[in-house]
Length: 203
Image 1: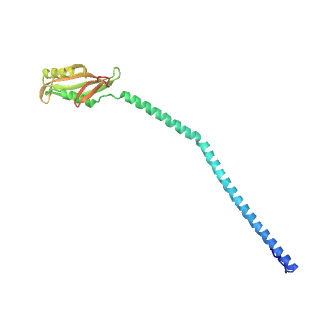
Image 2 (image 1 turned 120 degrees about the vertical axis):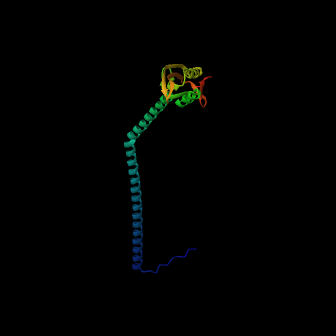
């Protein structure tokens, strides 16, 4: 059972209370509207700022796109040139080294034969190494022995003594000589101081 509420306030007082209540409601609604407006404005400003940032980044990407493409094309071109240069250098490098040839020749030297100079060149047609050596031998027999050893080596071709003459070396009479031969670039090192022709398809 709901009991009725009796109002003993005078009419004038009642009007004043109602007026104050109306003012408070209006003030509260105004504050709420102000807060709502501030929130909406802040959200709109933040959204606009993000959109401006995205547009700026997009414009920078569009502006720099040609530069990035140019850099990528340059890198690809340089990589292609490097690969081509490596392929060319692989074809130019001999499969044997001058050290291997020199070690092999030194291992063949007779006791009374000495080398004074040595020159090596690479020939392209056919692919081979040209070797020219200058040296001295005590006798013609020692020189002939050295030539025979070079000619009997399977890795050396066209062994030729192009010059031989009497001379003096360290106060002794010697035979000065110049010998040349060819080394095909398909030989391989067997062990230190020796060379042999590649077999079984081994290059």
